[in-house]
Amino acid sequence: MDNNTRKKAQMLKAEKEVKELLMTSKLARKSDQALFIMHWRKKARNVPFKLFFLCPNLFNGYSFKTIERCRRKIQNDNPELKDLYVAEKRLETQQIYEQYSLNM
Image (cartoon, rainbow, N blue to C red; front, top):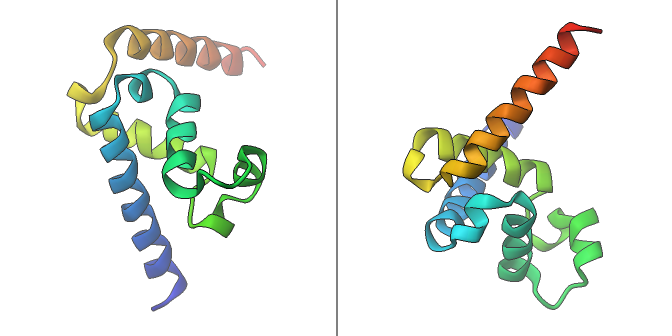
């Protein structure tokens, strides 16, 4: 299996695992931090959180950014897995960042 195929398979696996967490937890829909903590508990509960956060791949886990990216894609494709209030606040923040970047 070449590197691109392996990466794609890892992304699909991460997406599946994140979707399961989003389907079972309303808190996970509201907070990427909570979502990542749930991921840690599922993958490596007995490993200190700091170690898992710094080296998730050592424990068959995914980085915080990977979890966040999966959450964004899943919620974009499955709006029923969004918390509407949080989605609105995230959109407002995104618009502020866009304005900020245009004024540089």
